[in-house]
Image (cartoon, rainbow over all chains, first blue to last red; front, side, top):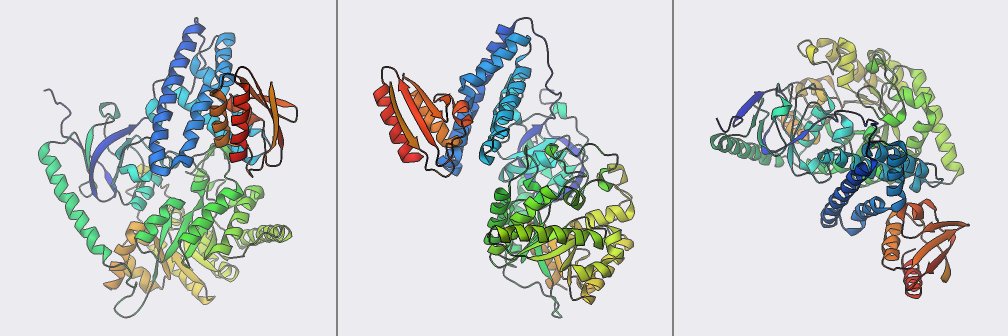
Amino acid sequence: MAEEFSGKKFSGKTVYNGVTMGKVLVLRKDQEQIRRKRVENPESEIERMQRAAEASKQQLAALYDKAVKEVGESSAAIFEVHQMMLEDEDYLDAICHVIRTEMVNAEYAAAITGDNFAAMFAGMEDEYMQARAADVKDISARLVRNLSGQGSADFSAMEPSVIVADDLSPSETVQMDKKKILAFVTVHGSTNSHTAILARMMNIPALIGVQMDLSEISTGMTAIVDGTAGEVIFEPTEFQCSEAEKKIAGEQEKLRLLQELKGKKNETHDGRTINIYANIGSVSDVGYVLENDAGGIGLFRSEFLYLGREDFPSEEEQFQAYKQVVQMMGQKKVIIRTLDIGADKQADYFGLGKEDNPALGYRAIRICIKQPDIFKTQLRALLRAAVYGNLSIMYPMIISAEEVRQIYAIVAEVEEELKQARIPYRIPEQGIMIETPAAVMISDELAQLVDFFSIGTNDLTQYTLAIDRQNQRLEDFYNPHHKAVLRMIQIVVDNAHKCGKWAGICGELGADMTLTETFVNMGVDELSVAPPMVLKVREKVRAM
Amino acid sequence: MKEFTYVITDKEGIHARPAGELVKLAKSYTSSVSVIKEGKKADAKKVFGLMGLGVKQGMEITVQAEGDDEDAAAAALEAFLKENL
């Protein structure tokens, strides 16, 4: 048959509902690290390098034109600078020099030269110039990609696509333009993975555990992703397309009806209310929060400022991001969680190293307490941004009252430094995440120290049930409604209320509408959910 | 050879974007153009070298142009610096 692949259907596990149709973008892992290879003819390597540089410049020129239209000339100028860097004779001569003297392949020469130039910038005093090291690495990486024929690893020129991959890491997904992702379809991953969390945030269908052979699927194919049926169809037939279009229209109608709940209260028939806030991962997500009429931001995952980059974000960069979010939210509450890195969220420049048991390892507040320099940069940015709106700080992975006292001591140091330097700041409301069984058991003691609790049900469930949330083989054992977890939530809420504090839920359980009624009855004060879930949960509360 | 000095007033100094524009301008002349800061000299037609000088607000730079169109090059660069930096 000529169209052997036509209408090929695969099943998977749905992590977010919805139906969509669009072009496929397959992301393949870089097969190998850049290898140093000896070459016999350096002149032909130099020619290859020059061709790759030419191709890179053309891509950058196209990116520049596109960026001018989308974001304006001044923001687009960086692509023009990148082109100039690729024309820079010192840079090109250095690559040729390595190829000729060491008799090595162009990929290796480009990578090593990029590292050397980046090191020169990184060694400069000026913070801005230090950041240019990333630009040099960026153009070198582009050159290497073009040399090894992997030009597609660049997300900047991406069309709206169904992302198909083996698995996705948070650092890969942060680089993508969220508006251009129609759906996720992966071979691996779990329902609580970051891809899944991202899909919920963006309100797009996502399927995991799809038993497909990636070598048979190519970028540019058409795909229908049906989260409701748990199916993906590659190269669908005309009939399948028209069926999908009907479903898509039906979903849009449901969404339209939900819009009518905007501006209404989260109130039950007997007059009980609950706050419904939204979880976000970056400044650009605030749009989703406002669009869905959330009462505030219950969890801003600040670690996404740290992922997908080469070096720590500066205080100024963080300050601008936090300030922008609180200003965009007006008087509404914005709870920013301090750095929660480690475990499944890694950034190379932290140099954390491999651990046998990362979920129980060196992560989150533990890093912050042990490496206060990293922590203080973030705290300074937060205290400064607090001046501009209703900001609260939340500390993750707490297991003891002693940790809270250590944090307060560091906050006091930061406050003193800001005061000395006459920089405007404010000490905002400070709370903690309850995500370890230890914190639940001492929540009576913790409630006296902090202003609020927010229960992180993903980790709390994983630690309580001793089930690794990344391990697909355990999904049958993973019961998110386990009585142990629900009783813990009740304990935490009661202990908070005894001290006149409030308690919310910011894990995925908060958006589980089979539990909304239970939570309201338990006296939970706030649910923080993915932005597209806000109106759905409101609908549920109002029906009580 | 034409030469002039200029004190940078832009608070970010010669950062990536203006460095790029300056290189583009310098390249449009056949004369060789250099920028000197505290005895360090960089070719104004090479963006890495120029950015590598790390010129910041308040610093004085010397611009030299040498070649057939040195008068025009020096005048254009001076105008550019006054306008943008």
